[in-house]
Structure formats: C-alpha cells, structure tokens
Length: 480
Ligand code: AMP
Ligand code: MG
Image (cartoon, rainbow, N blue to C red; front, side, top):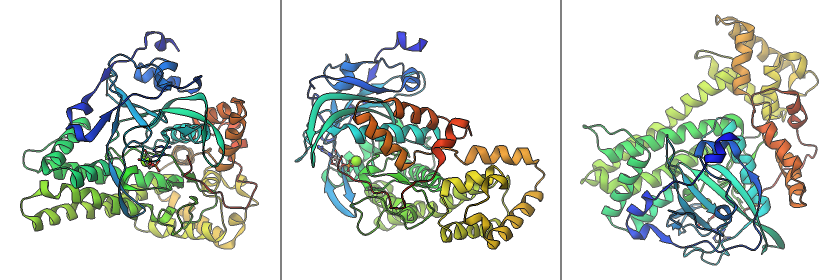
C-alpha cells in the first residue's frame, strides 16, 4: 500500500499524566526469532504505522514509546480482584489526524502485574483475536483492533508446549470499568477524579455548564454499552467473559478470550468452559452490562454529590436508562434485519414470534436472517421454514412490508446491510487456526478476506456460511 512507505511512529503518552499508581513503566522481554504472520495493512495505513517487526515483538523500543502496563482491578465472575496488565505493554498513543489510539503489545513478557503468569500468549488465541476482532469491525461493531501478530520463535508452556506469539492491539484507549474500580478501592477521591477527567478529555465527551461532568461520563458509558450490547445480540455474539476488567468505558469490545458466535439460536447458550453457572450466557449479556455499569457508577458516587443519597439517586437514574436505550437500539436493529424502515407497536410480537420459532426449530441464527434476505426460494428445506406456523408468521411479515412505501429492492438492500452473509463461524475459525499453527496461513487469509465484507453476499462467502457439521456444542477456553 502506498501510504505505508511514509509510515512512522508518532507517539504521545498522555497516560503518564495520571498519578504514578495507575501504571508501571517496564520494557518488553525480547524474543528469539520474531516473524510477522498477520498484518493489517488497511489499519496500518489509517494509523500511519510502519510494518515494524522490532516494535511488534518488543525487541526494539521505538522512539517516544511509553512502554507501560496499566493498573486495574475488576470483578471476575462477580468477585473483586486486583489485576492489571499482566501481559500487556502499551507502546504509546499513535497520533493521527483524527485520533490517538493506544498501540499495545499483548504477550510481550512479564510485568509488575503478572502475578503467577508468564506474561506470554500462545499463537492460536492471538490469531483468533486477530480474526474475530477484524470480523467485528467489518460487521460495524465497536471493537479494539488488531494490527499485527508475530510468532516469537519461542514456545510457551500451557497444558502442553505451544508456539508463542504477540498481538499488537489498537484501542481508543484501555480504560476499563476495572480501572475505575482500581482508583476507587486503592486510591483517593482525587485519584478517581483524575482518571475521570482524563477519560472525559481522552474520549472527547462534551461537557455542559449546568450538569455534573462525571454524571455525563456515566451517561456516555451507559449509552455506548447499550449500543454495543444491542449490536452483539443482533449478530449472535457471545463475549464469554464479561468481567468488569473486560468492559471498556469507550464502548469498544475488548478481550477476545472465550468468545464465540452462536450457530443455532439458543438464548441460554454458553461456550466458555469455565462459565459453570452460565453467568455470561447470550441472554444474560445485557443484564451483565448493567451490573458492570453499576460497579462503574459506584466508583463515581463521591464525585456526583457530597450528599450520598443524592449521589446514589443520580447514578441510579443513569443506570436505569440502559434498559430503554438498549431496547430501542435492538428494536431498530431487528427491524432493519427484517426490512422494516419504521417502527410499529405490533413489531414486538413479530420479532418475538420469529425468535420463538427459531429457537424451537433449532434454526441457525445467522442463516435464518440470511435466508429471509435472499427470499423464500433459498430457504426451502430447512426445518423452520417448512413449519405451518412459520408460514403464518411469513404472511404477517409480508403484510407488514406492504404497509410501508418501499420497493422490494429497497427492502432487500436494507436487509442485506443488517444481516451478515458471513460471520467467523467457530468451526471454520478452528480449522484455519489448526492450519496456521502448522505453518499454512493461506486458509486464514482466505477467511479474513471473506469476513472483510460480511454484508457483501459474494460467491466466496457461500462456502463459509454453512452451519457446523458437528452437532456438539462448541467449547471455548480461557487458557490463553
Ligand atoms: P483475561 O482473562 O485475559 O481478562 O485476564 C485476566 C488477568 O490475567 C489480566 O490481568 C491479564 O493481564 C492476566 N493474564 C492473563 N494471562 C496472563 C499471562 N500469561 N501472564 C500474566 N498475566 C496474565
Ligand atoms: Mg482481560
């Protein structure tokens, strides 16, 4: 790409303006034989970032780099713990014309927050994050991005020896609910205020003279999470580990550990092997977002008012807005998936009825909407579409279409924009990761190309849209 020839690092290090307790400066641990195996040229071009094996592996420290790990805490499966970047090191904030996102190495060696960990990451999970985060971005879902993956030329010890890798992650910033929990539990009121002021500035949240700025910060976070959660639900994405340290204030999806897209529509679905009580199931995600946002709101209480009762009331009022915001985002999104340009009260039952039938028929989530988009001819033969109840629903749906003044082609265009023809299906992702770990990156690159245009409805995507062969439920592991 032509832009890359002029690319260079151009770091700002605003995070260092925070009190020192918020981070620890430490260099990455060099690796033996780094090799770039994935590089996002398009993203690099947006960032003006060079293809820099030295920087991506931690073997060289670019000029002006911060090299710091962030302190944070968090509720993991409901329990409070001190955490921090145990294997992540922020190189710096790359200044571009439009923004200054964080460039961070994941798996670059031990940090003061590593606890018992080795600070390293395995190749499979880093490539998985690269693939899924890229797919999420293409789907139009706010997310951290992946700029590069390098193989380190070293192995790491997990249940068995695995090839090591480092992911270069790009994020608006890495401020988590857990960062605020850290400030609140281990710092002073001034520390929380400092972090909140920094976040307001970094995220360019507009202030209003007549409103408490920290309330505006909470409001913005609630709004962004409601939007994000609606987006996840609409594509059938299950994050898998929505601990408060894995929820950003910026509203970007972060931490692609045990996440997965669901195949058959089942709201109670859980993929993560460690989520024994289904805390982070698909259907629980919006509720968990509210739980996490409540932990965020708690940290801000001393800043909302000197009177505790008024602070709690003000915070609660913001949290309570989530439900309606989320529902509105979801309604509009589901309407668009079904080709509806406006909203009518009867749409609620239209949506609910379809989802009930899909669940009962164990219909594939993505393919059902894809099939509806492509007209009935494409859908013949599946269990859902042969049910008399579905035909009744279909009639209602068609009537609803005829009640709006849009042509068939306008409806199809809207549906195609909201129903992906291709998602990173678990089986296919596993397949390309297996090949990549044997040294063949071609299948992965083919999959990445298909996922770049999820709404493209291209020929190449057809092969990737098949539901899984195996009826066993896919399982994901945190062992990263
Ligand atoms: P995660 O489940 O990825 O959100 O990680 C939870 C915490 O464990 C974070 O503080 C990570 O930085 C830390 N962590 C995960 N893996 C490692 C590792 N291999 N070495 C050190 N810290 C780790
Ligand atoms: Mg995490």
